[in-house]
Length: 378
Image 1 (cartoon, rainbow, N blue to C red):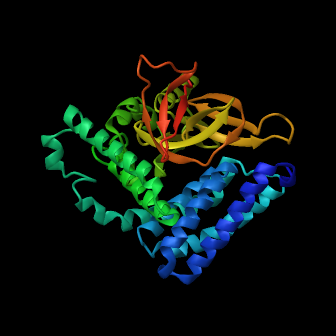
Image 2 (image 1 turned 45 degrees about the vertical axis):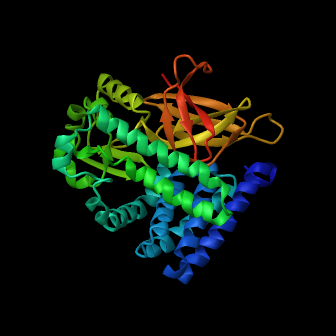
């Protein structure tokens, strides 16, 4: 595609370039301008996700979080990653959106470096019982306890309300405070979560600091035997989304179908690789990274674990483009009016007495309090 044919995408590319320039300047200044750099990084991440570059967008968002937390160790990684952003934007302008697999191949080493920094820099947070309770406390008030679940959801909702009220303040203060509150919401999820390595203890070293809700772990339990056949298993967690690869195995058709069924149950998908499989799914079903979009005047959102790609259409076609989503093994394409920047949202079930459009499984709430219908992929 030529971006001059698509006014909307041209504006998004322009916004991305401006944010990239600002982030580059902030990084060159060093640790004295990290807060401003975080603002540029978040703007850049949102623009990249709209352009279909969700893999690199999630990495830039991780960088934004580290900058917000004042971690100078992320500066070198950011400096090395930015040339890839420049290259990706040039590809977009030439009409080429890199395939997700190609993005992962190029960005894999940077994702690994960033994961090490995030794990190291946030290690001190484990001392806060509100974020990661000690084993003794978990035994007293287990994750299955109704009071524990109520406390967890109450915390998420209180922070959500604070973010909505915070919109009435000075613009720069709003953005900075919202970023910190969003980070706190994400860390609140760690209360009651369990390590994914419980499913694959032999691969624990290859999935350090990857946590999931106990309910998600239960839904993934059938993967225990399937994954045991793999020569190696690796997993990383980025933006509340887990990327796991099983290498060195070839499942039967029935096993592959079983794998897809499990991933569908946790709002994720699975894809074949040359030597195995890639599994993508959220760490929680209460809060996850969502790709919001507009369709027929209504707001919808789909899990980042189900988002595949967005292909823009020519001007005058009547809609912005085609959104490709996948649940487990089932792929669907949607003609949408607009795709919005991906963001982390709280999810809720729709009360029985409240009408909902056909094909909707629940609702998601963004930072502004806007409601998005969650697409049912069943």
